[in-house]
Image 1 (cartoon, rainbow, N blue to C red):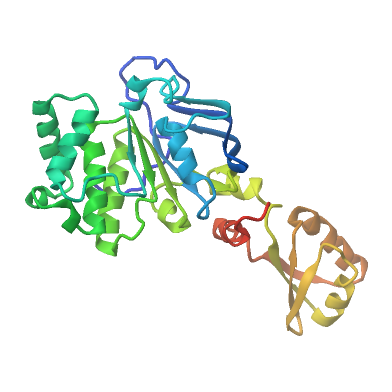
Image 2 (image 1 turned 135 degrees about the horizontal axis):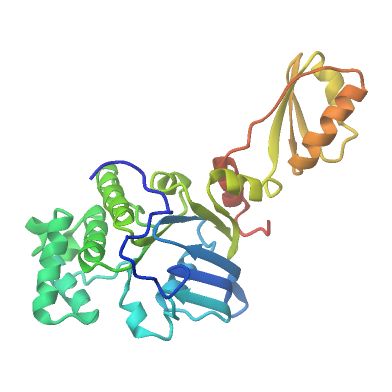
Length: 333
């Protein structure tokens, strides 16, 4: 295995077999409600083989999305199609899906190997096959020596590796990872990343959720930003930045001959806020309407007989977008 980062557009295997569906995961206008609380709202998502990331603050709807994809929740509105059918209605589809949940899913009192055997039995394997798969899973993630130890004594990193081993050995077509790096130490984090990348190279459809942007960026360049149950943007970095360009405030820096005079000129502009004079020739300000500002501000400056030496944005990055989404929390964006 190498450290080359796979994208979410992994090529289809040249088998000549036509899949009976357009994409392994297709969500159309999916809404989920917990009483009066919105879990997902008009959520649209298409995932193809490879790794897709879903990033958003805690409580944004990531776990609800995972529950819809595994069939644990049925949408109140819209349609959720996985492998060509409904995971909520079809048990044969659910058996082709594996999830690494953020919460514990194995028994503390049993050994790691015994937990795997039980999990494989629940997926329709006979006892002999379940045992073979359990041994294979332990070997794939380097846990054979610990396999007969009580699971309750394992570290967080070992537990996450075991869950991924279950997926790797079982050869599921859909792999869902809900906050896979949560509480994991750096060495185990690197090992987990290599295992997840291997799933992408094997042409699995992998969905990784996290509240930490960097964790997803190390795995894939294709992901969505979620907040308040809504998908705010989806695609590669430049596409998401374009989608969200007016969804978060931009800090803009201007170099000119007289920053104080320019600040006075800006005070009458409703879209210019928090003006800061950095030095005699440099100022910064914040705008919530960058597209409009980039057009109108140069006209304003030139019309006043001033010269623009440079005009740059300090927040035109996905990290800035995500930081704003996270800080907004439960506020409606």
